[in-house]
Image: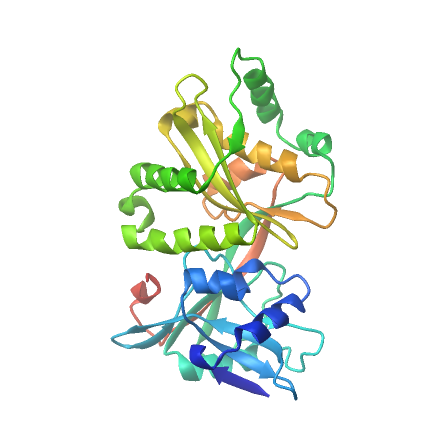
Length: 316
């Protein structure tokens, strides 16, 4: 049967076992990721006869004056339904009906590749966009999928007396990268305040403990000035381009292009793996990712909101 479990009632060991048994489950639904980004959460859980979790729908929530709100945590692109081969409840609508009883309002982004199901009353869906690139081909083959202009820029960089290149960073560099982002992409652009970066720091630390975080940086060769940096997270099905920042000088030097080329070079030749650029709704960003041969991929965002409700409740 399906049960609504609050955080204190969740068994996180059984949670992780359910995620591990779900083919293609993304890291966003893992307990360690949600602990970093949401802290506490509820869930609709299908319990087996021995109390094992056969399926689950995470429900991160916050209290607001008008009631409990289900929300999408920062740095968590997708959540959605986690199914195992033993799941007997396979329709998202069944889980949403319980979520509706728990949350007055609800917003959640589903994984890519999930066909939009029939939705219960009061739920609506919109399409969002990310970009994927299959990592099965070797790097020279991936490189041929770049635009001619990007291949030319990479050759031009290699011909410099001191070519720019991406190198490994550490936790200290991650702090520098966050400061860089705050300087050049402030609250007016992103809506993020200083407190919002605590979740990112927790997530980086948790990913580093598990050996799945990759912090990469591009520095000016003579001065050591940080031009750009990025955080990538590895998981069972590929790599996520999670966070990045760049200075005006780094943008002029095409440092973001070098960071992504470095990531694709390092992860090429892995059949079945996918590089998720984690974005592309903005046309300019989508064109940038397409220069690497990435293809647009749709996913759905679900909303539960009473008629005529002021939409700012989603801005948490």
